Image (tube, rainbow, N blue to C red; front, top):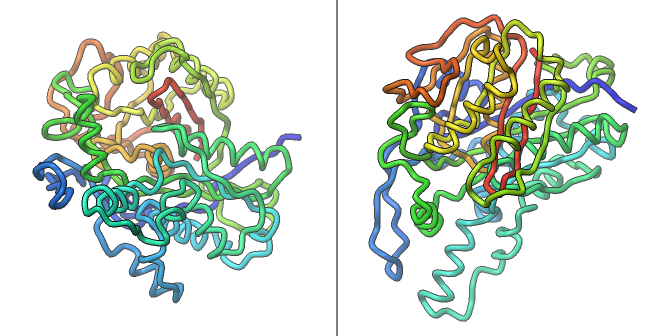
Length: 408
């Protein structure tokens, strides 16, 4: 059994704003959420340090609590709060709050790279640093990677399949594909999919520094002088729905999921493989029937690391062949940072806005073309485009690759 899958709602929050519309407006206008941040692990930690980061403003849960009459700020880790707020916006946007389909015919699949890192570091500070024999009683449920999906299910009464995926930077892409698969096979009619992350914590940032992955100043995807990624936090959620189900209830159709490619490099824990990433793209191109499209908007993984961007550019050329330069490339991590598990979902929300509006948001902080990144990078300012289809890439540590095709 195979069914058409459409998008009927979305929600997003990041350093660019606390709604999907705000994130799109900032990306389109070329505004950045990246700024220097002080990371202080407390009295028992190493000295505080400053790094660029792109963090969602505190207090975002206040609007949720006011609207839904439920205090959540103390019961959930930040990553789960981000997921819950994005899901609430998406469900309201789709007109599904209180809908009977949320009972047994809806799935929730969200992706997260690490889960409750903020809670974990606080617990370790008490136990190891302060020598306390007690940590907070809610530590375990706040740490678990499934904390976000459980919170959404309880808030909105979802009794269908509910679980989390974790595959580093590809987590929310895998979640989207998994949710789509359950609709395609008839298991559900609706899937709440996406992801979130909140791991820009002192201990975690120190870990990223040790593998020399972080930029010194900002994120410069595909620019010759790029020197690393910038950590971000936030989340994004999309509502996938069977086409006939959406039509029957009169929902607005915002876009369509066309298919995806998924591969494993089976090569190296941090270095990408051209064979693996290009194979995922070719699978998605076939699934979305994009090979002969005049123009496809490519939302690149685009982390700003020297090796990743070079490999992704080569993958685009390999997958599209002599038509590679026909397709504009955007890299929105230059604005909202790298949300790890939440990145692919936020990229998808922005890419869908872009092909609906006919506008490609610019890659920020771009100084100089790199001959080894010979693709059509959108730089300078927003660019009018003809593309009505988009390809969204997510290439993760461990060689876990996803490329997804969408249409407006």
